[in-house]
Length: 336
Ligand code: ACO
Image 1 (tube, helix red, strand yellow):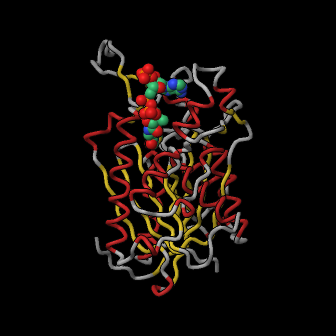
Image 2 (tube, protein in one colour):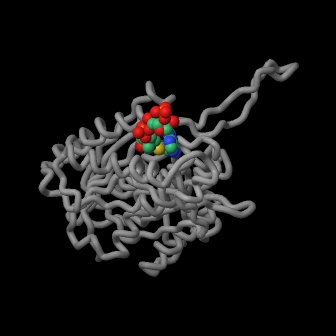
C-alpha cells in the first residue's frame, strides 16, 4: 500500500507500568491443575502481574505508563494533541481514553479508544502515524493497556495461565519527511475466524416482556489455542515479508524482532521461519505473560531502558490476535 506522506513521524519516548501483584507458576498450581513444567515448556511464561484491589482499572496503569513517557522527555501533557488508547478491557464501554486524558491533564488532546486485542498497539501506532504524516497533529500519545485478569475464567487452565495485566505508552512526534522513522506497515483482518478468540456477548434466553428485546452480558475469554497458534506461526512471517518487500528491506536489515508476547514458541517459530537469529528477538513474556495490547510497548520500553536498541536500529514489530487481526510495523530507532 502506498501512502503520500507530507511529514515524517517518529517515536520520541516510551513508558510502561505493571501492577505490583505477581502470580508465579507455583501459585497458579493452587488455582488450577497445572505445573510449572507444563506452562514453561508450552509458553515460556514463569510469572505474570495482576491488578488487584477494588476499583482498579486499565486507567491506573495507563496513567503511570503515560506519565513515565512524558517525564522522559520533559513534555507537558498539554502538548499532546491526540491520545489513542488501545484496549480490549476498558472500564467503560463508551471508551476509557477520555478518563486517561483527564487524569494526565492532557487538556488539548482529543482521545479515543481503539479495540483490536493483541494487535491493538500496532493498529494504534499506525493510526497515529497517519495523523502525523499527513500534517494534522504534532504530538500523539499511544497507549496499549489491558487487564485481561478481569476477563479470564480463573478455573479454565487453558487460558488463565497465559494472561497478565500491564500498560505501555509511546509518544510519537511529527518531524521532517527526511527524518521519518515510521517506515511502513502491513495490516490484515480475517473475521471468518473471530470465534477462535473472543470475549463474546451472551444474550439471556428470555427477552424483555414488552419490547421483545434481548439483553445480556459479556462472557470470559474463550480461546482455541491450537488454531490461534497455527494462525500466528503461518501468517505473521508472511506479513513481515510483505512489509519488508514494500520497503525494499531484507531480513538482514532487521536489528530487532519485536512480536506480540503471546508465547515463546511462537516468537521462536516466526524467527526460525524467517531465518532471523534468536539473539534479535525481544522477549520479556517470562515475567509478564501475554499482556495483550500492552505487550509490545512494555517490551519496547524495557529494551530501551536496558539500552539494547541503538540509534538507527531497524525494529520489526508484529501484533496478532483476536479478530483475527494481525499486522507488521517497521520502525527505525532515533533517540534525538
Ligand atoms: N496445564 C496442564 N495441562 C493443560 C493446561 C495447563 N495449564 N492447559 C491445557 N492443558 C492440557 C489440555 O487439557 C490438553 O490435554 P489433553 O491432551 O489430555 O486433552 C493438553 O494440555 C494439550 O492442550 P493444548 O491446548 O493442545 O496445548 P497446546 O500445546 O496447544 O498449548 C497454548 C496451548 C499454550 C495456549 C498454545 O496453543 C498457544 O500458545 N496458542 C496461541 C495463543 C496465542 O497466541 N494467543 C495470542 C493472542 S491472545 C489475544 O488476542 C487476546
